Amino acid sequence: MGYTIAQKILLAHADKKDIKPGDFIEAKIDLCLGNDITAPLAIEEFKKSGFKKVFDRNKIALVPDHFLPAKDLKSANQYKVLADFASEQGIRHFFALGNMGIEHVLLPQMGLVGPGDLVIGADSHTCTYGALGAYATGVGSTDLARAFVDGKCWFKVPPSIKLIYQGRLKKWVLGKDLILFTLGKIGVDGASYKVMEFSGPVITRLSMDDRFTMANMAIEAGARAGIIEPDEITFNYLKFIRGKKKLTQYAIHNTQYKSDKDAVYEKIYTWDVSELEPQVACPHLPSKVRPAGELQDIKIDQVVIGSCTNGRLSDLRIAAQILKGKKIKPGLRLIVIPATQRIYQEAVKEGLVEIFLKAGGVFSTPTCGPCLGGHMGVLAEGEVCLATTNRNFVGRMGSPKSFVYLSGPAVAAASAITGKITPPN
Image 1 (cartoon, rainbow, N blue to C red):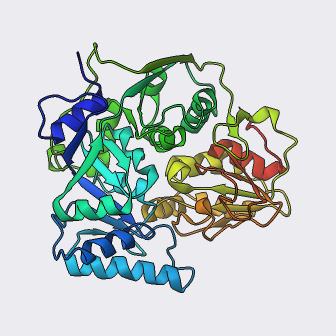
Image 2 (cartoon, one colour):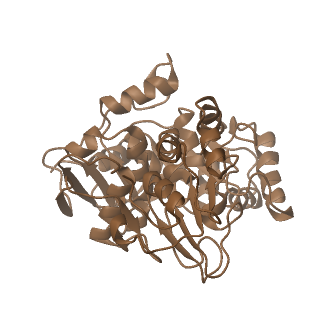
Image 3 (tube, rainbow, N blue to C red):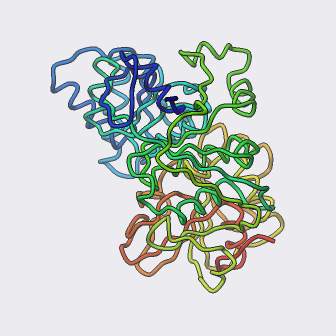
């Protein structure tokens, strides 16, 4: 019996000759990640247990992205815990204000994850890195603390489901629309404790940014990981990101893992998405999906373009293309947040920021802020927001009596102009 790509990566990191779904394994980690919410708990447990030195200062990343710049005393203290620990331990990959970004966009941008890597992060959207052909999954803060000690973590080997996308996408239909469509089909528990393996001709033609978006939201179906087989697009991206440096410096195993032809999947889905229209998830679940064109009577108070799902440069370019020379609906708030400092700089150079400002929007320093209802766009009772973020649960962005719809950047930008949910022309 053959292995899936996910099983091959887990096996390569474990002291095993064979694995199967349901097995418990201990595996070596290539990179472990914590942010300003989850890492302080891990650091506390690490110190409480009496340990003095982390296993490898080069294999830990600390990214204070949720509340930076600090919005209050508590968030300032959270940041200080990370900064002090990074200084004490000599942790190489600590990203402070000025060179930071939203973790799941920043780490690939910095060349810190690659094909065949095994990555854990104390944040559920760590699954984003599966777009590069890595096995990446979210863990708790105590698991992260243990990884600080010896660079290992326990895993239960998950089964895989395969999702095959046929056809060609229409204009304005992006990776976000594909993953929202998928969630609408299988539900928020359709991949519980499984690996979602995205494949088919539509996937092979997707840009890396769209692949990141799809892998990012695998957790919204309950998946442990979302993964895409690395190909020429993957390696061209890595060459661009890493310059002239050799891939072997980063991808420890230097193996382009592929699922075997006789690999066993718990379930296989095949969809022709040639007629797919831009999608929107309605409150209060990412799986309550409808075409944007069916929701044009929904008035909105705020539009947020950003997050680890859709805060990349290509997302900002799409939004700017639609907003150029236009004004947003009077009274509506448009908040645009680039995912990293580098994206911020590029958006300034390309004139994208000027387009957003002239349209009546605001442009923020990188932060997760409004996605989790933390700051930079918290909703009041009764307010409606259309966001390019990944979750729209009750109270996710503020008041439990607010409403969040999810879309890609094209629908978000078009809707900011009309003040209602609107598909782009």
